[in-house]
Length: 403
Image 1 (tube, rainbow, N blue to C red):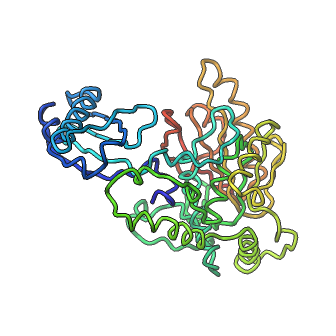
Image 2 (cartoon, rainbow, N blue to C red):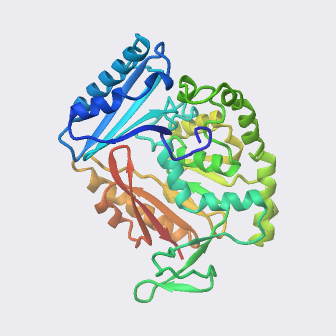
């Protein structure tokens, strides 16, 4: 899981769940655990807590858990581990909701969001975890699986989920439209094609995460150390399995050459496109009007090992056009968080909408927007809306079926 999960920050191993009324209950529940069986006293540790819908604060919870843990070590070993806030070897994570206390050990260590490829940063880049999840929501992950298996059937993005359709199975037939609004007919299922464009790429996070999914490359496959290696939860035999597991997961990846071969097969045999020029064309395209941002994106793509799958171009969003009949275009435009910026950004959002309408018919458009008023300036009706959080900022992930 630590090697492979794309959208998780940490993998926690729960060691305690208890109902508590007060801080004394917290202390006794934690103190009676056999903490020396989890990690040795020569390891440094830190406690991180959260509390919701409870009179017990997170700060008080932290102190009581730390005291209970230390006293458990003293009682059983006459030693106690040292608290280290900056770079602990063991992280104890606690959550109190109402009266239910959950205590877990972090098996990850450095958060999984830190992929290691972001060598060059930019202004407010989208986080790797969020980007990976948003890319998956577009149907790109489903398409990548079809490419890896050599499927001869078209892959569709169902605009209406089974739950939205009263539990009835949706016939994935692009000739059967679903009606939405007077005079508008939107396909119930949109065919997916291996074309992915980010015309406001910034440091390239969307494109890089899309390329990693295409190659089936695990985000942390090169990482040498995880938090579980400081714990006593696993026998030595498990530690010895780490390298064989790494090799096994690497064997499931596609090479760049294999990737282009499968892309060509899907385009010609499944989508029935007869275009030899497309065979060696990177399936992912990045552009930005800021040359320095584009340079950062190229540097990050090199670090991630996916540079050959992405083409880069200095261009304004209004000048981008679709290279194929279908595909996915994603955008993360500025949010306009400061007073007065919303009005200034409205023309940009209108340009985004005009570009999608004019140049991307047959495609899915996805926009990560931080302001509802700016969304109105796009001038298109979103066919799907998902609330997501970019850091602590509430945003909308909006789908536009362009037809």
